Length: 131
Image (cartoon, rainbow, N blue to C red):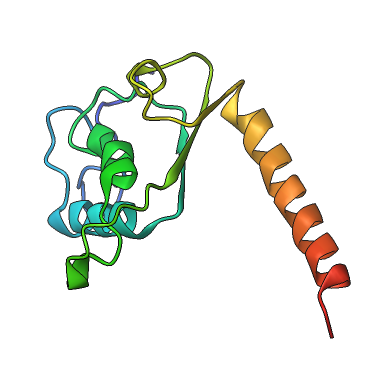
């Protein structure tokens, strides 16, 4: 039997959909706003498994790299976030120098290694912290 697309709820007949945005769909305003706020505030941004060509979110790493330190006080000083790409291949972010680092590989393999290393370093820092 061929599955109906899009899949529908057995009870109400409504369309079942993951919490994702498909091409041509608008991005929810609250999600867009939250992404922009995080890009302006982050010190480090991981950009994982993307072509970095779909806007407006392809702009977020660029925003993180260009943000102004203490924007509320208009000091004009810049504090660029570190941008790390985890991807199978370079993207425009790599080619344009937006990314500081490119870790080439499968995100399902690389990200767990990063998490384990951060946990290890965090444990080391706790053991060596002054009392």
